[in-house]
Image (cartoon, rainbow, N blue to C red; front, top):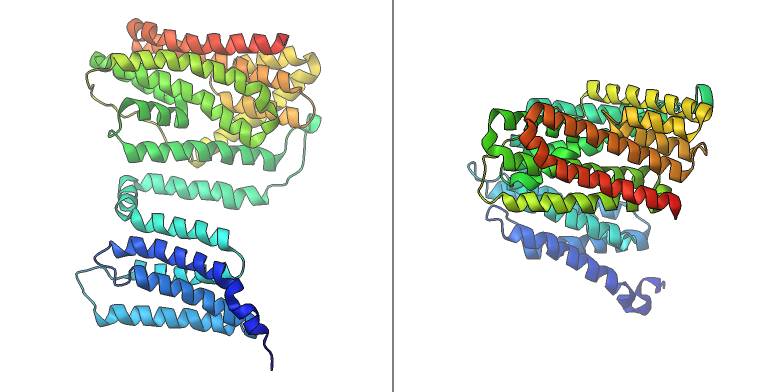
Length: 423
């Protein structure tokens, strides 16, 4: 007689069942608070335990059909319970049925040694169940054009990117189609997340969040929008100053995230530069936010969706041109030539020269300090360009109020950059 199944009285498997029970209780706790759900705390706990038991029996008997039979049993029993008490005007229960099936699968995952993954998925499932109204509001706040742009971003990421060759072409072997498009996906993804968040929060959370999210999408577009709004309605000047300053501070945080993803090796040099500029700028932004005592009319910036195909192609072309020019000029006249490219390209876009510098650094054609210097010069050029926009479009009064914060960022960046060169 084979006693392998009973070895150790099975108590060595107790931790797996405890984890499974916790997963079921977590999901069941959320379902318990839903009046429409016909399954709650006990049901989900039992289903999760049943999943682990099915995994154990399937493993010991070497029969995967036990797991499949368990899924069918749980599914049929749950559907039957809802059909028996069907309410045409109430919740059809499909969400709870799906949650029960997932709970069974998570219990099985625990048995097969994927406890950490199962817990992560259980938390994610609970979050999706809990935020039902928020998720519904999200879908209602997005327009048809927004949904199309999300589909376009999916095309950029999952259809175009995989088919592009991952090889270096052209002079200096600087142009890699796959790598160029990967940078397009990265920048589009970061901008799209900010755009969606901006559409969701709308006018509910005031100037700070509008400035931060606007800067995440496009600091230039946000600066332009509020400068124009201030000229049309001078009463929102305090609001415009705060939003413009925060949007431009967000550029530094955005650059840090991009560099951390693309080339973490540059962070020890670049982070002190960006961090100093951020601290100097935050002091000025905090001052003007303190001045915003009376609630001004909140004005949403008009920003186009950054994941549209035309915008992606435009950035990809710009990045390829800047990358080629940077490689050519850097080879012809050294780092000083690259700095000139950084100053010119930074007027309209910091991302392109940033990614180009990181690419050349990864190819061994550029030292990390030179790359950080090029990125810093592009940032300074971009700040000067946007400050000029504020004066030209928003008027001298708005320009003077924004100049303190934007110049503070520039002073912080320059000071840290000089220190890096001489330390």
